[in-house]
Image 1 (tube, rainbow, N blue to C red):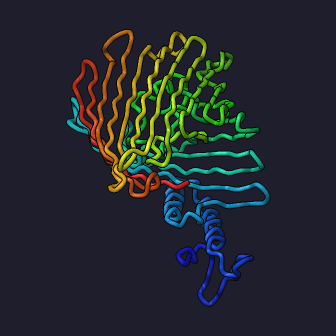
Image 2 (tube, rainbow, N blue to C red):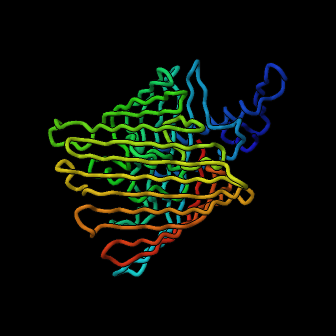
Image 3 (cartoon, rainbow, N blue to C red):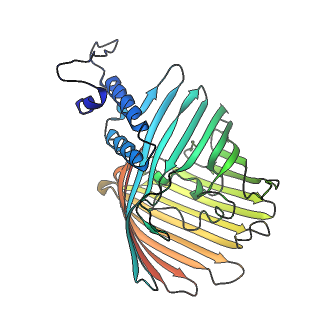
Length: 404
């Protein structure tokens, strides 16, 4: 790995001692690369006190992501300890027409720019931390968002007692709908459902995430998954009100799924038929979910489909969350020979009290899987039809780079 000599401190006329494998006696490029990466990461870490530092670290991680699988960004320590670094970049061009006063709004920006950290500190004790600088460069209500605040998106630790019992603690996705617990890096269309996180702002959460404790596990030969947790939820001034309680169950008919985050499409690598249901409650607020996910190799490619039904009723506890029924449906078919997936997505919101506020969004587009979820290009056209207001048209193109 000669390109990283500058990071490893090699100088002209000076040779570094070669590490040799015990069996072959040859230089082990994987270990040399790991040493180079460790020094590169120490350099990047010192730069991460500013947005500029985060950009440097992101570029470094992206370049390292082009290395072979044996040179992943993993640093191993003594015993069971290890540390892993990743990056997610979703770079977008977006335009939407407006009723008035501006005919259209166009932006070139970074929808997500995340650094991912994970690892194991002891046997069966792991952690995950993720930062984000969302909508970097996009024009928001306050103007161009060129120096956004860096936020902590996820931060939780996990204790694994057995497959049937894992305990998570920290800032994490609450276990509600399948779409709301999917990784942003593996979505089928460009983004989540429009109304997937309707309860986030009223519950004082952040994009489906809240702080708390959760137990989860896998039963019936890992085909049945459960998740149940207690979270902060909406807090009053004295923080003496009841906590938020959320739970989810999912059954996988064919292949099983494990891991904290769900996958939006397996690109034909698994046979998945999963059905799930969930609840979300705090005082008299209630949320309910029913969902189904299908992913299956079929013909010259693979088919993916998802359906989520959500019911929200904020009651007197969350007065800013009106009673509503929301539906998400999406589907795509991977043409393996072309690395291409045509995609459709439909979102519908129906408010119970009045028709004003009802909305339907129908989207169609295509994904080109340059290197699966590690590198891809997605394009999506969306027709937005709000009840009582003028219709809008939106077109978005996204380049994704991802390694973890």
